[in-house]
Length: 271
Image (tube, rainbow, N blue to C red):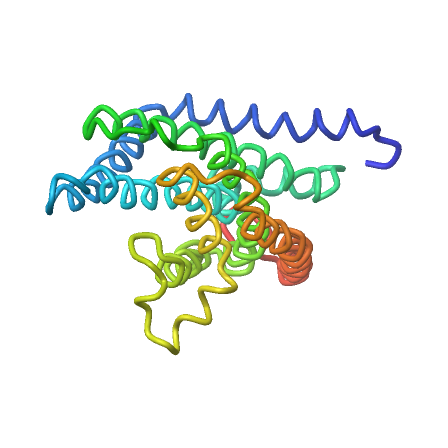
């Protein structure tokens, strides 16, 4: 809306955060199911690291658990942004949200804010469960560096989520499931549960353009070795560069998809 101040735009974005929070409260039972599933998934992966010499068990478990937790956060953020259109259509609010006198950037900023908060809360719950289950030691971990890595990686994944959000917009029937293709490719090439060096030579180049590769490498170094921010600077800078590139690209793709959906009559509740 023309003439809006920055404070008004922030309030408008916050209203989306508040709305999504109310939706989570409304569907608290389902949210509990999703969180339990994620906790069990992380624990299952962690138990793989229990096998082997006890002397290195803590390092193995932490390596796998760190990958599972980080992927849980990144995929939750990606999922919230990418499927925002599908949920608007499901709730029957897509016309109201997209026809409102509100800049699209303000709307997407609110969606991204919610995605980051939601991802952090779910990851914190999983981390608490993992700590109790495995009694892993984080004595030498640099938690601040790990959190800074997550914050830096959020920008790039928001950009990817914006690009993927166009799929439910232009294909109401198949678009939402298709967003999982993005996640599957990133999961494969980024070394979530293994080092990228084990990938076939023809796949490995994809890991260099995946934000998750740098996120996992930097966060694991911070958690397992206590590496500081200065030493992690190359990976953090790369994450910021990817974020600066992917956010405008993702927004441009989404805007083009929105114009197409409006022109073809797909911007409605039933698609």
